[in-house]
Image 1 (cartoon, rainbow, N blue to C red):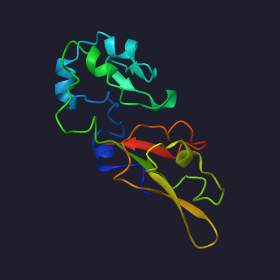
Image 2: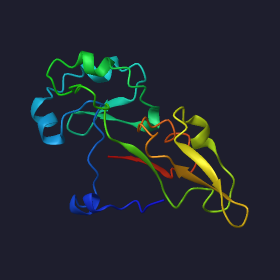
Image 3: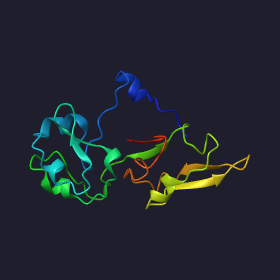
Image 4: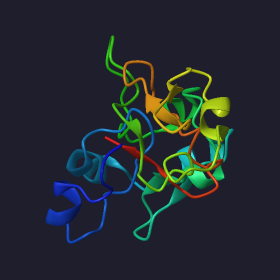
Length: 158
């Protein structure tokens, strides 16, 4: 468990960077290359890509999870999404906040049940509670755990 407010958020005045599609170039390079054509957003089979306030594509995990199918990558004519050999689509990971129901004493396992990677496990703790623990090496940052959390205690961060 970590705090939601990171140094990066502090330096950006509390505004996090949008979550770009998988395989996105670093933010400045992405913005320079992306033509805002909408090809990735209109072809995403999961329907999780949408334009941000400036028209650039961003991931909205409230709409679902990313399956890393590669459709956005193949549809990008501008080269803003680039698959690097032997590299994962991104380095995002789930973070479970202190507002998790299990931390507060209410039994909940919805995030772990949705995680195909089995990256969220539940460990017994004193007092009979089971606390979620993220297996960082197994988490691919797909966001399957995000939308199902009833108290929005999950964040997907780089």
